[in-house]
Image (tube, rainbow, N blue to C red; front, side, top):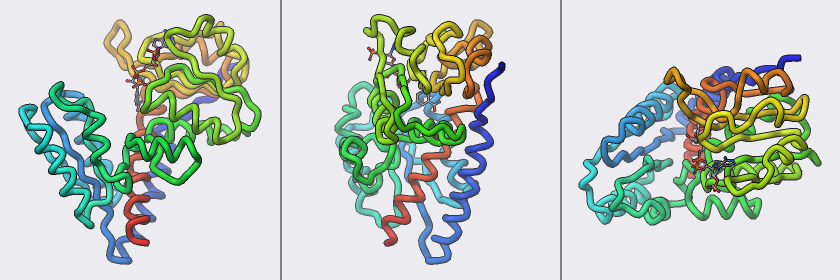
Length: 283
Ligand code: NAP
């Protein structure tokens, strides 16, 4: 039986509508939620992503500014600009688009953002809050994946979940969020000996690798929920994920497509985090 499709576009639309409603309520109290985005350099993908982030914000009633700087910008100048935004009460969220030029230390830059405005959820304080179960901002991509998993109605308590990939921004926070819902979590990575042995046991698989066909039909337990974070290009140059979608959909119970799965949810969760930053600041 073919898996049910988890429609990330539809869920993102619903979340954006909720954000718009809460934003109206905040505006009625005189608070305009605002996201400040900084882009250093001309990376073509980053230019597109930051434009989307501004448009998504304004379409939902949030305001957003995009500050663009040349890749010759000094790190000290960027840090000073972030500190100014940290101190500005009209700015609720700050996002520095990655990757940064090579002469900049991305860790130092992210750590300079106030944790109260860290809407990407990349600050160590945000990561620590997730680790210890304290309130903080969740990294947008795994946060979006959790929302996608929720739509299947699966009760994660005691279920086996496998996360493929252990990056700081996706794999590790994803595993912690699943653990927070009482799943039994296994993290796999490039040194994992027998990936299939792990994935075959999994009720939920999240693939966050960046390589095509990391997860194929023979590696999936019948009925499993499969979330595909990967963004790759196939031989025809079309966007595809880490999962062999056509094969895996024959055995999985639920599956996200690429495009139209995790991507739109990552964008939606940034709006949620920005709105929450404004709500917290106004309390
Ligand atoms: P990353 O930092 O490059 O991490 C990739 C992870 O995959 C690493 O932990 C690596 O293991 C692991 N890995 C590599 N080859 C493997 C293999 N053959 N089997 C098992 N694990 C393997 O990437 P990322 O930032 O997490 O992103 C992952 C993918 O998601 C990329 O395609 C990225 O473009 C996409 N992405 C999409 C969104 C979205 O909104 N849709 C957001 C973020 C990322 P080691 O640690 O051992 O090297």
